[in-house]
Length: 525
Image (cartoon, rainbow, N blue to C red; front, side, top):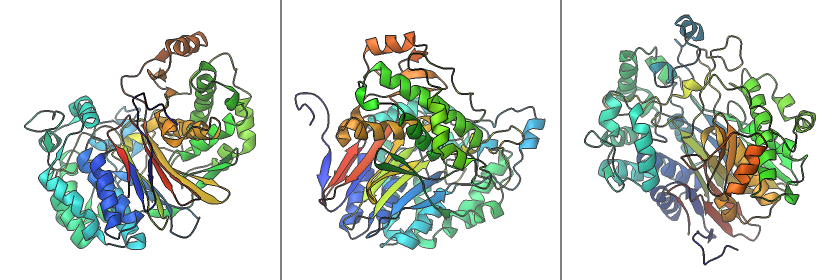
């Protein structure tokens, strides 16, 4: 139990349902949807779409999503891939001929087709109860009337606004400038698009005037995107990948997501007695950092569009983890993993909902970098993601850019299972950090027995492309020790990641936790 003398927050306990997400309005709307008779799918869609209005720098209907779903009354977990593909005219060779070694981060070349709306429509039709008109109504109202800009959102907006170009500046600045905390942001163009989706389903987005606006805007910028590309967008049901860690199974979305990286990390960490280490000491931070370098190196080599993944079984094999674990020197840092030529990011939103019938949804939704490509459609202001920057331009690489192909994705929803029972949907935002964040949360719970909110609150570190980032929650003595071990240590400007989780108790009680690094909350009824 936390020290009530100290700042902090308690976990949320409820029995009928809980939503945990990164913005209070989205959590409130999700709970209201359940109170009106909707289920966890209805609530998750309602909250997620609203997050695109509350946190437009992080996500929106021009982006992608991944979903893990546990149906009511069953313990199986279903995965839905709502990530978009490259248009038919996409060509890595053409980009190489222009002298490019990576897909431009903020150019039209980075804009892949938006997959989230198709996934939301499929989820609603297959698993929802209320219908899109009822589920989208709250987001339509808030997009029209506006939402006050929250503190963390304002912080991110200021850091990301420089990427906005052309029509995006008109749609995502307020009176030509970055909005301040508490100022009202409105998105009337998106409200109209959502009304059409509510009325017409996916056709209201991928066909007709809305699609014409997106295609014309992208074509004007030099894109190859066509109406047939948008009409052909389709999500896919898949099967999660899983790995066991000391009696707890971690379920992840399969490639093109990077969830297998988290499983590999935990498979490596099995070979170390983390429980004997100080949870906030240098020894644990070092071992985790080394495991991350090795797991991410495997990710960089193997993960891609599911039709092009070559060695997933090898990546998840126990023998692979054992060999990698043996490479870790407990007293000295190894060189970092070879850097990706494709881009990684820090921007996304995550929402999890569990309802009274114990349907559980773990949903992550993103436009990749802050404000995505920095581009938006002229009429409706749909912010285009830059997920194509997740492709490689290396000829022959499994993740090489190609027409109709999905890029490797950093966003990953997670679930835990114990004794055959799904016990916790969760997600850790933070781009490249996410697999490390999943492993960190699991080890906080399993090795250190932390309560769920405490596991969320605990300080984080991450060894990635920027060296070893160590949050201020660690002591200077730990940072010094890590530097002595050879890590390139710095304190990040932004906090690392943002976690949301719901524990499903055997006694029928739900426990929700929300990361203080974001504006959000867990809310139950």
